[in-house]
Image 1 (tube, rainbow, N blue to C red):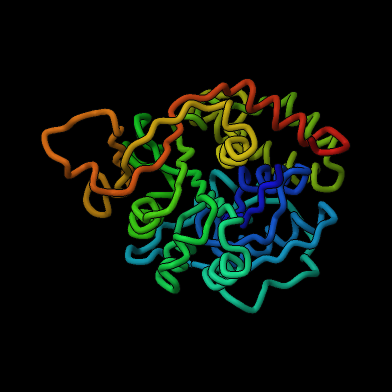
Image 2: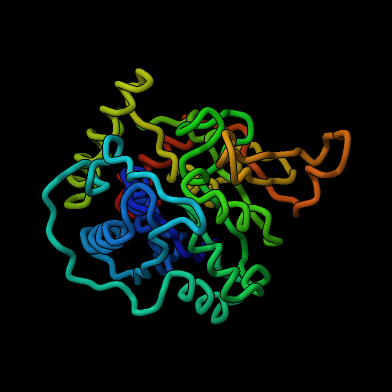
Length: 318
Protein backbone atom coordinates (compact mmCIF):
# COMPACT_ATOMS: atom_id res chain seq x y z
CA UNK A 1 0.00 0.00 0.00
CA UNK A 2 1.42 3.38 -1.03
CA UNK A 3 0.88 6.33 1.29
CA UNK A 4 0.86 9.64 -0.59
CA UNK A 5 1.78 12.46 1.76
CA UNK A 6 2.53 16.14 2.15
CA UNK A 7 4.93 16.56 5.07
CA UNK A 8 4.50 19.78 7.07
CA UNK A 9 7.64 20.34 9.11
CA UNK A 10 9.96 22.66 11.05
CA UNK A 11 13.31 20.82 10.88
CA UNK A 12 14.48 20.39 13.76
CA UNK A 13 16.48 17.30 14.80
CA UNK A 14 13.58 14.88 15.16
CA UNK A 15 12.05 16.33 11.98
CA UNK A 16 15.29 15.52 10.14
CA UNK A 17 15.07 11.92 11.31
CA UNK A 18 11.46 11.73 10.14
CA UNK A 19 12.34 13.29 6.78
CA UNK A 20 14.99 10.59 6.32
CA UNK A 21 12.30 8.00 7.06
CA UNK A 22 9.75 9.29 4.57
CA UNK A 23 12.40 9.49 1.86
CA UNK A 24 13.70 5.99 2.59
CA UNK A 25 10.49 4.00 2.88
CA UNK A 26 9.34 2.46 -0.42
CA UNK A 27 5.65 2.67 0.50
CA UNK A 28 5.67 6.44 1.10
CA UNK A 29 5.31 8.85 -1.80
CA UNK A 30 6.25 12.40 -0.79
CA UNK A 31 4.43 14.92 -2.98
CA UNK A 32 6.15 17.76 -1.20
CA UNK A 33 7.19 19.31 2.07
CA UNK A 34 5.74 22.47 3.54
CA UNK A 35 7.73 24.40 6.11
CA UNK A 36 6.82 26.40 9.18
CA UNK A 37 8.42 28.19 12.10
CA UNK A 38 8.82 26.22 15.30
CA UNK A 39 12.15 24.63 16.13
CA UNK A 40 13.69 27.33 13.90
CA UNK A 41 12.49 30.32 11.89
CA UNK A 42 10.79 29.36 8.67
CA UNK A 43 13.66 30.42 6.38
CA UNK A 44 15.96 28.03 8.25
CA UNK A 45 13.31 25.31 8.17
CA UNK A 46 13.07 25.68 4.39
CA UNK A 47 16.83 25.60 3.98
CA UNK A 48 17.03 22.44 6.11
CA UNK A 49 14.24 20.71 4.20
CA UNK A 50 15.92 21.46 0.87
CA UNK A 51 19.32 20.39 2.15
CA UNK A 52 18.13 17.11 3.66
CA UNK A 53 16.41 16.06 0.44
CA UNK A 54 19.51 16.89 -1.60
CA UNK A 55 21.76 14.91 0.76
CA UNK A 56 19.45 11.95 0.21
CA UNK A 57 19.72 12.37 -3.56
CA UNK A 58 16.06 13.26 -3.96
CA UNK A 59 14.20 16.16 -5.54
CA UNK A 60 11.11 16.92 -3.48
CA UNK A 61 9.20 20.22 -3.81
CA UNK A 62 9.42 22.44 -0.72
CA UNK A 63 6.89 25.24 -0.13
CA UNK A 64 7.58 27.83 2.57
CA UNK A 65 4.82 28.73 4.96
CA UNK A 66 4.06 30.35 8.32
CA UNK A 67 6.76 32.26 10.18
CA UNK A 68 4.52 33.52 12.98
CA UNK A 69 1.59 32.25 15.03
CA UNK A 70 -1.90 33.30 13.97
CA UNK A 71 -2.44 35.45 17.06
CA UNK A 72 0.17 35.19 19.82
CA UNK A 73 3.65 36.68 19.94
CA UNK A 74 6.18 33.92 19.25
CA UNK A 75 8.73 32.82 21.81
CA UNK A 76 12.39 32.56 20.78
CA UNK A 77 13.32 29.38 18.92
CA UNK A 78 14.61 26.55 21.19
CA UNK A 79 18.25 26.77 20.12
CA UNK A 80 19.36 24.97 23.31
CA UNK A 81 17.46 21.86 22.12
CA UNK A 82 17.94 21.83 18.34
CA UNK A 83 20.78 24.28 17.81
CA UNK A 84 20.53 27.70 16.21
CA UNK A 85 20.43 26.00 12.80
CA UNK A 86 17.94 23.33 13.87
CA UNK A 87 20.48 20.59 13.18
CA UNK A 88 22.79 20.78 16.16
CA UNK A 89 24.99 23.68 15.02
CA UNK A 90 27.01 22.19 12.18
CA UNK A 91 28.66 23.69 9.11
CA UNK A 92 26.62 22.66 6.08
CA UNK A 93 26.52 23.60 2.42
CA UNK A 94 23.85 25.88 1.06
CA UNK A 95 21.27 23.83 -0.83
CA UNK A 96 21.16 24.33 -4.58
CA UNK A 97 17.37 24.10 -4.78
CA UNK A 98 14.81 26.82 -4.18
CA UNK A 99 11.43 26.83 -2.51
CA UNK A 100 8.28 26.77 -4.61
CA UNK A 101 6.87 30.16 -5.61
CA UNK A 102 3.52 29.50 -3.90
CA UNK A 103 2.88 29.43 -0.16
CA UNK A 104 2.67 26.24 1.86
CA UNK A 105 -1.07 26.69 2.38
CA UNK A 106 -1.66 27.18 -1.35
CA UNK A 107 0.49 24.11 -2.09
CA UNK A 108 -1.75 22.02 0.19
CA UNK A 109 -4.90 23.39 -1.41
CA UNK A 110 -3.63 22.85 -4.95
CA UNK A 111 -2.35 19.32 -4.42
CA UNK A 112 -5.55 18.17 -2.73
CA UNK A 113 -7.54 19.58 -5.64
CA UNK A 114 -5.36 17.60 -8.05
CA UNK A 115 -5.62 14.36 -6.05
CA UNK A 116 -8.81 14.48 -3.96
CA UNK A 117 -9.15 11.70 -1.42
CA UNK A 118 -5.59 10.46 -1.93
CA UNK A 119 -3.32 12.66 0.20
CA UNK A 120 -2.40 12.33 3.86
CA UNK A 121 -1.30 15.56 5.49
CA UNK A 122 1.41 14.81 8.04
CA UNK A 123 2.07 17.80 10.28
CA UNK A 124 4.94 17.57 12.77
CA UNK A 125 5.35 21.24 13.71
CA UNK A 126 3.07 24.14 14.66
CA UNK A 127 -0.12 24.00 12.63
CA UNK A 128 -0.32 27.39 10.92
CA UNK A 129 -0.01 26.03 7.38
CA UNK A 130 -2.92 23.64 7.82
CA UNK A 131 -5.00 26.35 9.50
CA UNK A 132 -4.30 28.73 6.61
CA UNK A 133 -5.18 26.03 4.07
CA UNK A 134 -8.58 25.72 5.73
CA UNK A 135 -8.97 29.51 5.61
CA UNK A 136 -8.02 29.61 1.91
CA UNK A 137 -10.36 26.78 0.95
CA UNK A 138 -12.66 25.33 3.64
CA UNK A 139 -13.48 22.41 1.32
CA UNK A 140 -9.92 21.11 1.79
CA UNK A 141 -11.25 19.19 4.82
CA UNK A 142 -13.33 17.07 2.42
CA UNK A 143 -10.46 16.34 0.02
CA UNK A 144 -7.77 14.92 2.28
CA UNK A 145 -7.52 11.21 2.92
CA UNK A 146 -6.47 11.84 6.52
CA UNK A 147 -4.49 14.19 8.74
CA UNK A 148 -1.76 12.86 11.05
CA UNK A 149 -0.55 15.30 13.70
CA UNK A 150 2.56 14.94 15.84
CA UNK A 151 1.70 17.13 18.75
CA UNK A 152 -0.41 17.50 21.83
CA UNK A 153 -0.87 15.35 24.88
CA UNK A 154 -4.04 13.68 26.07
CA UNK A 155 -2.91 12.44 29.49
CA UNK A 156 0.85 12.97 29.75
CA UNK A 157 1.07 16.68 30.54
CA UNK A 158 3.28 19.06 28.58
CA UNK A 159 6.93 19.41 27.65
CA UNK A 160 7.22 23.21 27.35
CA UNK A 161 4.68 24.07 30.05
CA UNK A 162 3.15 21.84 32.71
CA UNK A 163 0.21 21.28 30.36
CA UNK A 164 1.24 22.06 26.77
CA UNK A 165 3.25 20.22 24.13
CA UNK A 166 5.62 22.39 22.07
CA UNK A 167 3.93 22.30 18.66
CA UNK A 168 0.49 23.12 20.04
CA UNK A 169 1.82 25.79 22.41
CA UNK A 170 3.69 27.51 19.56
CA UNK A 171 0.43 28.34 17.78
CA UNK A 172 -2.60 27.33 19.88
CA UNK A 173 -5.10 29.24 17.76
CA UNK A 174 -3.99 27.40 14.62
CA UNK A 175 -4.02 24.12 16.53
CA UNK A 176 -7.60 24.73 17.70
CA UNK A 177 -8.70 25.32 14.11
CA UNK A 178 -6.95 22.19 12.85
CA UNK A 179 -7.75 19.76 15.68
CA UNK A 180 -11.45 20.66 15.68
CA UNK A 181 -11.93 20.69 11.88
CA UNK A 182 -14.24 18.11 10.35
CA UNK A 183 -11.63 15.91 8.69
CA UNK A 184 -10.29 12.44 9.58
CA UNK A 185 -7.53 13.17 12.08
CA UNK A 186 -5.11 11.15 14.19
CA UNK A 187 -3.08 12.75 17.00
CA UNK A 188 0.28 11.16 17.78
CA UNK A 189 1.34 13.04 20.89
CA UNK A 190 3.50 12.84 23.97
CA UNK A 191 1.38 9.95 25.28
CA UNK A 192 3.31 7.70 22.89
CA UNK A 193 6.37 9.61 21.71
CA UNK A 194 7.85 9.76 25.21
CA UNK A 195 7.72 5.96 25.34
CA UNK A 196 9.90 5.60 22.24
CA UNK A 197 13.67 6.08 22.36
CA UNK A 198 16.49 6.01 19.82
CA UNK A 199 19.61 4.93 21.71
CA UNK A 200 23.16 5.95 20.75
CA UNK A 201 23.97 2.49 19.38
CA UNK A 202 20.92 2.57 17.14
CA UNK A 203 21.85 6.02 15.91
CA UNK A 204 25.36 4.86 15.07
CA UNK A 205 23.96 2.11 12.84
CA UNK A 206 21.48 4.52 11.24
CA UNK A 207 24.24 7.04 10.51
CA UNK A 208 26.33 4.37 8.86
CA UNK A 209 23.42 3.33 6.68
CA UNK A 210 22.51 6.84 5.52
CA UNK A 211 25.74 8.04 3.87
CA UNK A 212 26.11 11.82 3.64
CA UNK A 213 22.70 12.34 5.21
CA UNK A 214 23.73 10.02 8.04
CA UNK A 215 26.56 12.34 9.07
CA UNK A 216 24.11 15.22 9.45
CA UNK A 217 21.66 13.03 11.38
CA UNK A 218 24.42 11.78 13.68
CA UNK A 219 25.76 15.25 14.52
CA UNK A 220 22.28 16.63 15.18
CA UNK A 221 21.38 13.56 17.26
CA UNK A 222 24.40 14.08 19.51
CA UNK A 223 23.33 17.68 20.21
CA UNK A 224 19.72 16.61 20.85
CA UNK A 225 20.78 13.68 23.06
CA UNK A 226 22.91 16.01 25.19
CA UNK A 227 19.75 17.99 25.93
CA UNK A 228 17.80 14.85 26.88
CA UNK A 229 20.66 13.64 29.07
CA UNK A 230 20.86 16.91 31.00
CA UNK A 231 17.11 17.58 31.13
CA UNK A 232 15.68 14.18 32.09
CA UNK A 233 18.62 11.81 32.38
CA UNK A 234 17.72 9.84 29.24
CA UNK A 235 20.51 8.08 27.33
CA UNK A 236 19.13 8.71 23.86
CA UNK A 237 16.35 10.81 22.41
CA UNK A 238 12.64 10.52 21.71
CA UNK A 239 11.98 10.45 17.94
CA UNK A 240 8.74 12.40 18.27
CA UNK A 241 8.09 13.10 14.59
CA UNK A 242 9.18 9.65 13.43
CA UNK A 243 6.44 8.19 15.63
CA UNK A 244 3.86 9.87 13.40
CA UNK A 245 5.48 8.24 10.36
CA UNK A 246 5.48 4.90 12.19
CA UNK A 247 1.75 5.25 12.84
CA UNK A 248 1.12 5.82 9.13
CA UNK A 249 2.86 2.61 8.08
CA UNK A 250 2.35 0.45 11.19
CA UNK A 251 -0.74 1.55 13.12
CA UNK A 252 -0.73 -1.85 14.80
CA UNK A 253 2.18 -0.64 16.95
CA UNK A 254 -0.22 1.80 18.63
CA UNK A 255 -3.42 1.76 20.66
CA UNK A 256 -5.80 4.56 19.73
CA UNK A 257 -8.91 5.88 21.44
CA UNK A 258 -11.78 7.66 19.69
CA UNK A 259 -12.84 10.96 21.19
CA UNK A 260 -13.01 14.73 20.85
CA UNK A 261 -10.24 17.33 20.97
CA UNK A 262 -10.09 21.00 21.82
CA UNK A 263 -7.25 23.44 22.53
CA UNK A 264 -6.91 26.08 25.23
CA UNK A 265 -5.78 29.32 23.58
CA UNK A 266 -5.34 31.72 26.52
CA UNK A 267 -4.20 31.81 30.12
CA UNK A 268 -2.00 29.52 32.21
CA UNK A 269 -3.24 26.43 30.31
CA UNK A 270 -2.45 27.98 26.90
CA UNK A 271 -1.67 25.25 24.40
CA UNK A 272 -3.18 22.40 26.38
CA UNK A 273 -4.98 19.78 24.32
CA UNK A 274 -8.21 18.65 25.95
CA UNK A 275 -9.25 15.12 25.03
CA UNK A 276 -12.65 13.67 25.86
CA UNK A 277 -12.85 9.93 25.09
CA UNK A 278 -16.08 9.09 23.30
CA UNK A 279 -17.03 6.30 25.72
CA UNK A 280 -16.91 8.61 28.75
CA UNK A 281 -19.95 10.52 29.97
CA UNK A 282 -19.46 13.95 31.52
CA UNK A 283 -21.78 16.41 33.25
CA UNK A 284 -22.57 18.08 29.92
CA UNK A 285 -21.81 17.62 26.23
CA UNK A 286 -19.54 20.69 26.02
CA UNK A 287 -16.44 18.50 25.64
CA UNK A 288 -17.87 16.32 22.88
CA UNK A 289 -19.15 18.89 20.38
CA UNK A 290 -16.10 18.70 18.12
CA UNK A 291 -15.74 16.00 15.42
CA UNK A 292 -14.56 12.55 16.50
CA UNK A 293 -10.83 11.90 16.08
CA UNK A 294 -8.34 9.17 16.94
CA UNK A 295 -5.72 9.77 19.65
CA UNK A 296 -2.76 7.45 20.20
CA UNK A 297 -2.62 6.51 23.88
CA UNK A 298 -0.21 3.54 24.00
CA UNK A 299 2.68 2.32 21.89
CA UNK A 300 5.08 -0.57 21.53
CA UNK A 301 8.07 1.74 21.67
CA UNK A 302 10.59 -1.00 21.02
CA UNK A 303 8.76 -2.05 17.86
CA UNK A 304 8.75 1.55 16.62
CA UNK A 305 12.46 1.99 17.33
CA UNK A 306 13.25 -1.29 15.61
CA UNK A 307 11.25 -0.24 12.57
CA UNK A 308 12.97 3.14 12.38
CA UNK A 309 16.38 1.49 12.45
CA UNK A 310 15.39 -1.18 9.93
CA UNK A 311 14.01 1.41 7.52
CA UNK A 312 17.09 3.61 7.72
CA UNK A 313 19.66 0.83 7.48
CA UNK A 314 18.23 -1.55 4.88
CA UNK A 315 19.22 -1.06 1.24
CA UNK A 316 15.56 -1.04 0.14
CA UNK A 317 14.34 1.20 2.95
CA UNK A 318 11.65 -1.37 3.78
